[in-house]
Image 1 (cartoon, rainbow, N blue to C red):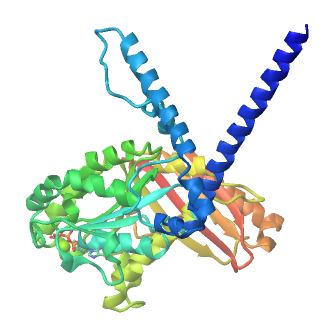
Image 2: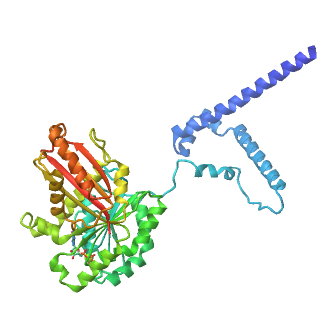
Image 3: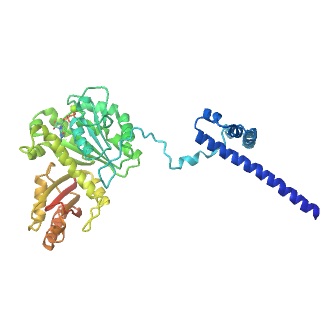
Length: 438
Ligand SMILES: Nc1nc2c(ncn2[C@@H]2O[C@H](COP(=O)(O)OP(=O)(O)OP(=O)(O)O)[C@@H](O)[C@H]2O)c(=O)[nH]1
Ligand SMILES: [Mg+2]
């Protein structure tokens, strides 16, 4: 019995000593780490007082480290010996065994160095814009100016880099200084650079769900932009995008259409987008709407800005909730994903209590839109009404707004609508879209 007690005491003493030694090692290691952090580079540690140097150079710690390393080596040898002779005997470190853990972690090893700043424009969907060719680039720039920073302009000549577009947003494809309205040359050049474009989209735009591709029909570069359709789709698939490619294409003015090359190029672009969602902007129509209001120099920049603001307003409203009726993200996605042509128009109505408000809105939006008029039976319809709180709480105006929604609803298979209240709006503002037109 006494010998058992003695043995226990001796054990306890041994343990205590051991623990004290262990604690000392732990403390010493902690202090060592603290020293390194506070002292900075190694040379500075040597300048420290001798006590700390002693800790740093403690042979016991090194011995302990050696022992751990030796143990690890022994263990490694054992594992290798136990392996089946048919199995590969890679010279792996213990830590390599757990390298899979990092792959499930939060840390991403993507190269973020080329990534453009995030969009500052409010939007229900995560989107990027690509402008191809001179006109396409200028249309895309209008979205960049509104805060859609995930925008790039692709061109075959630096001469088409619009003023005010930072270099980071401009992608010049080498091999030609423009293609001089030659759409065959444009297609060849874009195709040769397909991989570069795909990589650039990934590096600069990162993950977006919807890619709006802007191009002007008539020239050689923009008219060839759809040759990269698979490239845009491959990029979207690679970033697990949940949306689609949506084209915004312009058609030339009547004067320009007198030129057979411009006419053929433009038709080629129009024909190549029909199996995707697309918006056509009729340059003749939009220039007529602006003639007399804006000088020649400001014509396209104004037209581009006005259209960009209309689309941006739809993307923004879909991100907001309304006390009356909300047009939400899913509604917006349903409208955008419909293959075929989409019409968009907007108007302001002074008398929101007027009879036949629906007809009035439909007519005004159609006439004042830069898009060709709607045709056939559109698949989807969208009507967004923005009114001040006086109008929203007026029973007569509310009835008229309801019948206006039904009127547009009757012209499309599925209607999505929203009513938003803004006290800064003097009367009623309507934005109408009809999509899926074949
Ligand atoms: N909507 C819109 N259309 C434009 C604008 N600038 C040019 N266009 C139209 O775009 C058509 C084609 O011109 P560009 O876009 O410059 O041609 P490109 O695609 O650069 O082709 P190449 O110069 O032949 O390589 C013109 O005929 C105009 O109708 C613009 O800012 N907005
Ligand atoms: Mg050009």
